[in-house]
Image (cartoon, rainbow, N blue to C red; front, side):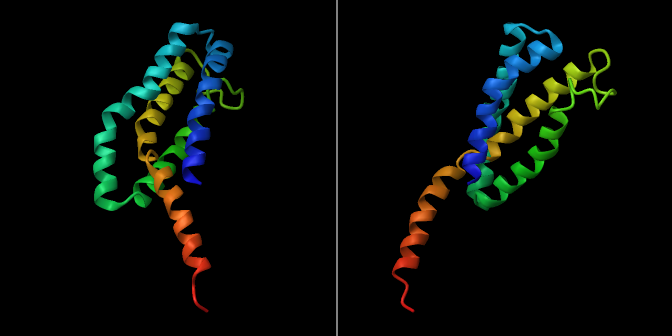
Length: 135
């Protein structure tokens, strides 16, 4: 289930970043492309550390930490362009907040990678154990 949520999270950026930055900040394709680099780049750098964490502590704790860290970041990511948050929308503040949040999502989303294969192999195993359990 967590890998499904991760896939929806990452794929939603592909559809919303270009539209959001065009409508809110009047950015073109160059700035959208830079945001995609900010979304993917930190994960490349952080992947060895995340892999070490998952090897040392298992996938459950890093995945839970990733979701816990990404929750407030995603909330703040929705502030630029929303009239209910006037402090974020003044001047270049909204653009900076948005770029920093996209970079933070790229940094911490690597904690969510790799959980799908564990979930996919764990479900059939649990089902087979339940089917053949002697009662």
